[in-house]
Length: 454
Image (cartoon, rainbow, N blue to C red; front, side, top):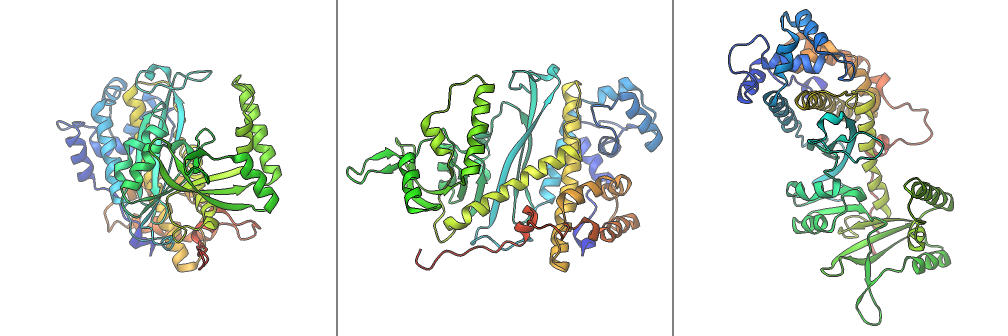
């Protein structure tokens, strides 16, 4: 089954054509597109320890290409960046998959999870990749990543400057949202313009309510919009021993949007941790003591959604939202396994070439891991660990290289599949765990249906 799912990605002819289209190759060259990509993807050093001399030696040893440091340095240019970016875009398109791992959640066609990860880079690229300042480097990059939780298809994978904040990005990429999508976002993406456009596109969302954002309800006496009194709400829930409820609320009192606010009362120990964390951060940043309203809101998990109770009941909002944490595990693998953040000061084009080559490697790995998870769950009802599978594939450099550029009938392709299949049992999530992991909860998802009275 895996043999049918996991196929070689590119032929050498296609890679060389992409390189020519990007202007990276204009005439017969020792370093063509296919070889340059292999050198970037499968050179076993991170940029932090990588040297041009070392890459030249690898080119000679592995590809019989004798190239000088200066010549290789000159190949890191805008055309090389464009070539690698085009390969990444092709991979993303080929990753589109309609084969769902789990059943649609209450009829949504896609469940979109999005977040970003960032890391510091050399200050010589501050103009192109400005950072946040402070004690760290003046330059940093931000990578936006979005995928469909139902199929594993990649929707967005893009390189940006650090100060291209999530809220701004949510607006610039809103056009990719389609009718019947369910968008799950962290509060950093919570922007009224984004929410309004999502509704206009007949899509749905579940997102956290930022502590800094006000919500309004209609006054019982005047029918005017008034700020929601969280202190009164907290006292009422305490008296009635209510831990979960929802209210009809509005955001943007000047041009109101009606939404459901799902209110989950947190245990006392969690509230204390949250308040302690906030106060520590305020002291570190030399800010004033948190306001009384802010501290009251620390007692709640607050979610905004435009879904109906029939689509997403209040009982499943939190379980669904927790799936967003999968992206945090994915970012951890990017850094711990693929070392995307292990960089040093180099020219801008070489930095971008390195990052795009890592994203191509990550994309290749993602495709294999996701298909392995789906095939294993269908055949054996087992759950493969994303982390374990990624680490194992990382060790198969030679096999992955052949898979990436191999022909469909290449025996080494089958060897790769056989190696992966033989190790499946060791890649499963360990059964002795008492607590269900996020991946197990995801593949074993069984929606809680709303009450018939709802």
